[in-house]
Length: 107
Image 1 (cartoon, rainbow, N blue to C red):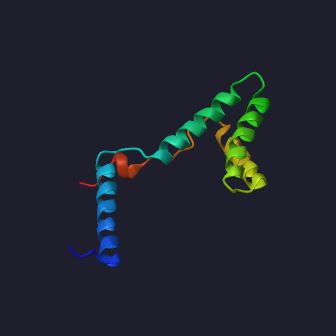
Image 2: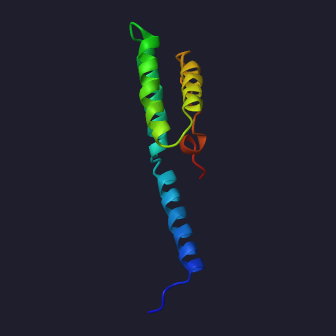
Image 3: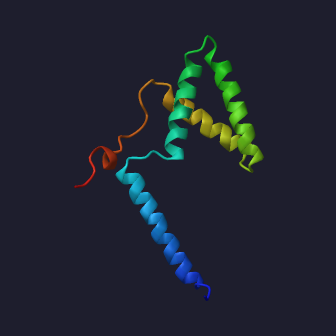
């Protein structure tokens, strides 16, 4: 049996991936990034409820940015992103937009 062409393999992979995405959407399955966003928000909110929130946030920032720096990201930029998110999450409101495509799926 001859090997499939690169284009044919790519086309089949696209079809498989589209089916995976459609199934995840139909079953309302959250992805890794959905969990990561919620976990990060919860971690920041918990740190802000601590006796010394700035110290707790600084430790959390240092741990996370150290890993990001080891992956090749710019340390200063990672710290800036963390601080922006911590500021955004500080008001106590849920910062996530509703997922209307999940709440109200098309018929």
